Image (cartoon, rainbow, N blue to C red; front, side):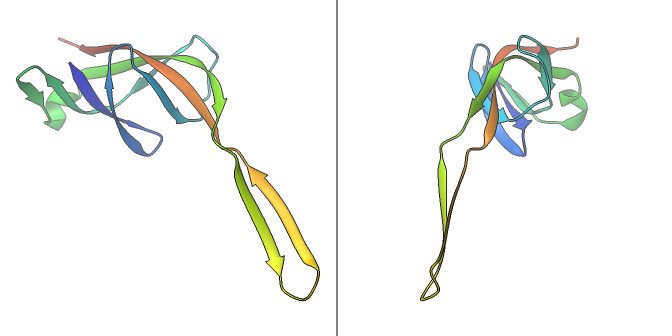
Length: 104
């Protein structure tokens, strides 16, 4: 069983026990978050209707904060002696999918 969820403006394919890196979320390590399901596949059964998907819930546990790769930014203007070097690392949150449940 797997689901397509919306997390941080992107769509991710998740199954139970998957570890996922999403945009930074507010919350403590060990707390639970829920993601809206956009599609649920259970064997041969595919659920995609909005009325049916309202019953499904994808829960995840926050594992911790991580940072993305270093991005180097260089500003340079010719013949003026102007050089500026900057860097950036995007903050992310690592979550572990704990369950995909239907509220039947």
